Length: 276
Image 1 (cartoon, rainbow, N blue to C red):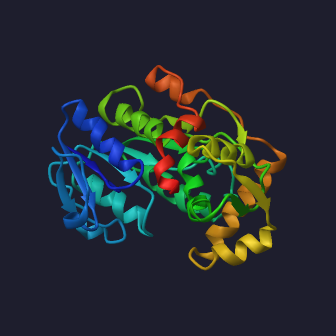
Image 2: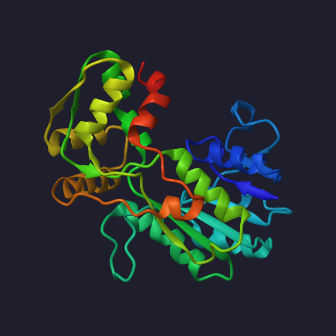
């Protein structure tokens, strides 16, 4: 049995579907099972990574793990006591190896989980995606309201990855041997700026969208209304860096699943309805 945490999330739901498609038994964990929309065939149970004692680990051999909550050591200890064998962690490309201090709060939080898992006796794989294509959904309310998006760093150049590609790599790492100790830097096929992302969303909608740049300070004032300041500062710092040092594709997705990753234009078409 494979446990999928965050089973209703943008990646987790595809991990559940991918495992079921391979005929594997899946326990889908969510904080609100009654409201969850899960692919039929999974065992849907309640659990919360912020409450490690709620983790439904009986009979579990492998776990797809989100780096959520503040108790990574306790979570890993519970895995070991339950005789979980394999863990695939959704981490981030912000995590740096071989440094004394991680660059920002996002990296710090994910590195805590990586460190706890790496120090255990578990068989592990770390997935470190570049910017998720789904981050562009932050623009959805503005796009639904008009043709201008006010946001910082239009020239931030990342390699956004489709959530389905992250999920496919996760399924391979959970179900197949040969991924032990791997740290996969997952990217899409090509680096593009945020301004280009917006243009491709407009093309998918049949609209001409404009990027109106605002300052990092203006963006911070808006973002800290709904997100912790350290996380906001980390995100804005990452975008500022990507504006001067473009990210590059890695080829890791093709290495694992045997085909090129989906492009941002494909993601935009698939998610057009999400932009109203």
